[in-house]
Figure 1 (spheres, rainbow, N blue to C red):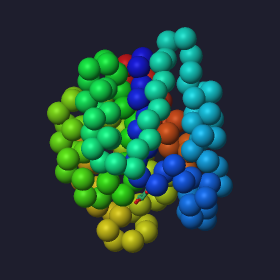
Figure 2 (figure 1 turned 120 degrees about the horizontal axis):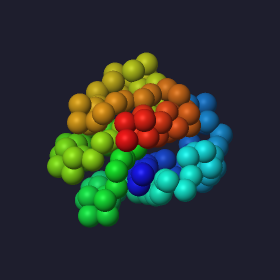
Figure 3 (figure 1 turned 135 degrees about the vertical axis):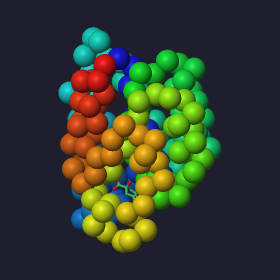
Length: 143
Ligand code: DQA
């Protein structure tokens, strides 16, 4: 299965950024940990991070052209207002799971709104890096 992980703005700062909320591990450590567990012969795993909305949208289009079977996306703050990312996800029709490290339901009110939630298969929040693995299991079980 071809799986694409997308991390949005500020997630390149994991480990340095508000560690009391997002933990002490860097994005590279998270990537290595998740990849190690699902990188079998049958799975082709791709990772992408960008701080730009347009680059995330271009990568979602790339996923269509490059026949990804599933997408796991943590859109960062774009979650709460990017209709453009929502439209891209709903246009490409690739099963997509939304992941957040923190529990967005129990933080500031504006974080409770996800404009992409209902074009995704599922939303996983508050499990830290385990959320990425849970999302991958969902896609792998579905396949
Ligand atoms: C986040 C939650 C968002 O509200 C925030 O803007 C982020 C990270 C998370 O993983 O918990 O950048 O998506």
